[in-house]
Image (cartoon, rainbow, N blue to C red; front, side, top):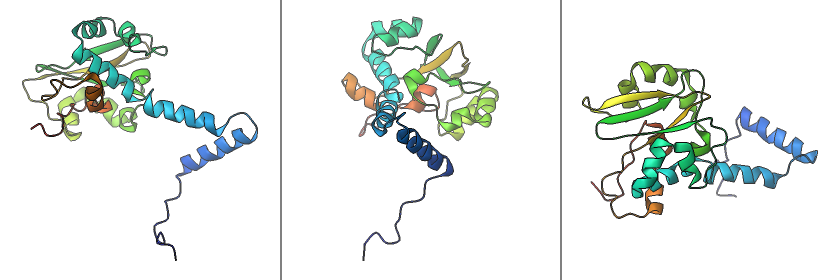
Length: 205
């Protein structure tokens, strides 16, 4: 008797089942290959995803001149690390400091800098986040696990089809001496949206 009895994988959701059916149909008709689908998924997970933005943040932390270019002409600066911001008419990067905390939203729909942050999370597209983060940003951030001290100014940036925003998080305490690659691994998507901070390296209080 198999030791896996009683631990069968859960069936796919309706959306996942429809996606698989569509993929199978396109493959059967010769319009697509499974390898092509796998390559696209891999690109979004390991290249187009938030890892791109993380590389930008890490570079800005170690290279003051790049950081200056990023904050003044973000679209040109991200090209320096191999990112073509083709889908964005304009990209602005706003910097978190001990005095200012930035958070991004799109109040009209779900405009998002996908070419540097990958696909937007479901909560970013939700109506409650889109409306409440503008009206009560501190409360929303606290509900998401981020407490911003009263002395820190919270600024909310509303993305649009013409302008997308990305947050440059504060460099965490204890990351001094880390390589750019090591710093990249610390940066999260949520920190670049502004709903989280970048955590200090393991072992740093």
